[in-house]
Each structure stands twice: as C-alpha cells, then as structure tokens.
Picture (spheres, rainbow, N blue to C red):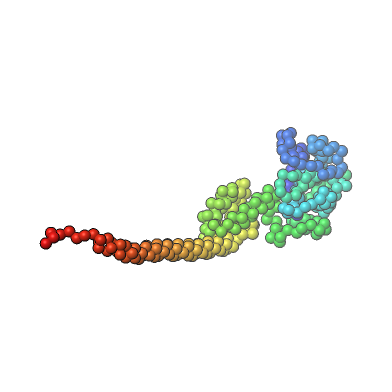
Length: 315
C-alpha cells in the first residue's frame, strides 16, 4: 500500500472529485465508504460543514486529501479499507474523533484505491494538522498499516519517496506489462523493432548507446508521464540481453528451417531421380520386348515366303 497526499483551500471541488462528479455530473464510479463528525452525506453538504469549522481557524489550506493505493491484483475487503483509512488518520495525527473525515472508494482503475478527505482543523478548535514531511510520514504509516493488517508488501525499490502518485503508478504498471510482453516476442531482436512495437501500443521510448554500441540507458513515456527503465524492472542491460536471446532464437529457428528445407529438397530430388529411374527401366523393358516379338513373327513370314512361287522368265 502506498499513499499520496495533497492539500488545498476548497472542500467543494475536492469532495466532488471524491464522489465521482465533474461540473455536477457523474464522471466515474465512486462510493462513499464512511464519514465522521459530519451530518450530511452529499459532497456539497459535507463541504459546507467542513468549511464552517475551517473558517474558525487561521489555516489557509484546510483540505487534506490522501489516496491509498494497493497493488494490482490484491483483493481488499470493505472492512479492511475502512480500518486502513481509520488507522491512517490516527497515525498521521488526525484522530477521526476530533477531525471531520470523508472516505470514498473509486472503481476507475485496475487496482484498489480509496480517497480520504480530512479537515485539518479539528472540531474542538485545536491546532491544525501538521503537513511537514508528509511524504516521509506517509511511507512509514503505510508500512506500519500493511504489517498491522497483514497486507501484501510492496517491493523494496517502491518503498521510497521518489513517487507516490497513483496516476504514475498506473502508468508504470502499463509500461511494465507492455514492455514485458513485447520483449517476450522472439521477433523483437533490435531496439528499433522494440521501439516501433511499443509505439503501436502508445508507449514512446528512448534508448542510449555507448561508443561501442552497447545499450546503456532507456526511458519511456506514456499518457504524458515519463518512466525510467529501472522503475519498471527493466534495466538497459537486461533489455539488451533479452534482445540478444531473441536474435539467437531466431537464428536457431532459421537454421532449423534451412536444414528442414534442405532435407525436403534432397528428398524431393531423390524421389524425382527414382521416378526417372523407374521410367527408364520401364522403357528399357519395353524395348527389350520388341526383338522377341519380331522373332515370333519370322517363322510365319518365312513359311509364307516359301509358299509364294518365284516369278522368273522360265528359262
């Protein structure tokens, strides 16, 4: 689980986004999972109640918006989502018994994620929720909740402060799967072919070679978001090695085909020669029968010749 946090001035647009609304119209499937210290359940009503509390404070950016995101494929029950949201609020310093909180779940992406809206100003008039080092705090809180609830841990390289943007996460997952699928194709043997096939699926790519022509760097862009090769588990060296493997497999396949075709050609030539030999033998046999037939007719000819009187002058 990872978290991404932003702060803002107005609760109205924030909660409308949480409810899946855009300019008053339904934009994406969303569900209100729960709320605390709020009487209303519609986004406009909750925004009005939160703003009424925030107006009693000097806080200029009272809106705290956090999205909690789980890995693609991990199933999370509603009870777990609510417990994770509650624990997040407590551990970040916004006790739900003292702060106004609204929790929405969105269903517009392949991974499970929820949006938590917190009024930084507590209902009892205390100091506003501190926003300093919220990225570092998010990492620690998410790790603690993941262990506490027994959820799937993210790879170590993801436990950093580099990026916790849910949009970038979805882009990363798409690029990773697209790159993996394309590299599995044995017909992809060069970076040019790889780049072209990635482009067909909407992913732009850049590859860097050293003076010896060895691939040493790669980066990708999808949906206006840049991604490094290391962020999707594919270093330039690994890509180069896979392309070499594909080239070897293609060469082996071509060699096997050439051998098979040569064998087929040889077999066809042998069959052709056998046909010619058979034809020759048959013709030779027919020729050998011809003299015998003539010999069988000679006695009759001789007998006929004997019965035919000879013509002469009678001298």
